[in-house]
Length: 252
Image (cartoon, rainbow, N blue to C red):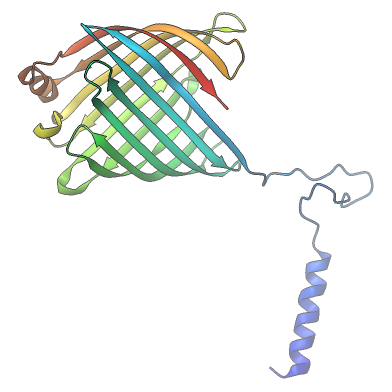
């Protein structure tokens, strides 16, 4: 194309661009007289929450349990970070610890598709997984997550988790919660058996002094199944466990 043709093409592109409706900016004028300002749907936000930040007592020992998550992004695309684990306060050793880094995309009004990586620091040996799943608000207002995890050597896992907020008053909330883990291959060194491995469930009553700050009390029930239960018995650990909990839920 010669110089004159290039100039004509560039002029046409500029003309077309200037004729397009303006995109959303805070101070722009409406596209037509009397129209409202366009909706700003590309803003970035951040959020972080410790949903479990608690002391668990019972069975002759005490543990600190944490479970938290946070994200940064817009309405459609977000970067997520999740972490959970147990710290034995008597021995000072980690009983469980994992983190996840995920990309999340809204696929419906209520559900997000997530994919990324999960890393288990404990139980040893540590192990990395590819992670994928869906998370969102299911019917009856249950917050539900369904996740799959893929690692080397044929180690695959699945997790189902959920919780529900039952508002007794504007500030007093009762929350049932559960997490169930499955594995396709046994790992005796980690105390993990094939099939249904373990259940962690709880019932917590919190009082929201502020929405972002809520002390709570409750009970938890943990149980190991199948080969995981056999590994626990061999190590002298309990197969099922009731505990009382007290903690503070925070978000910002």
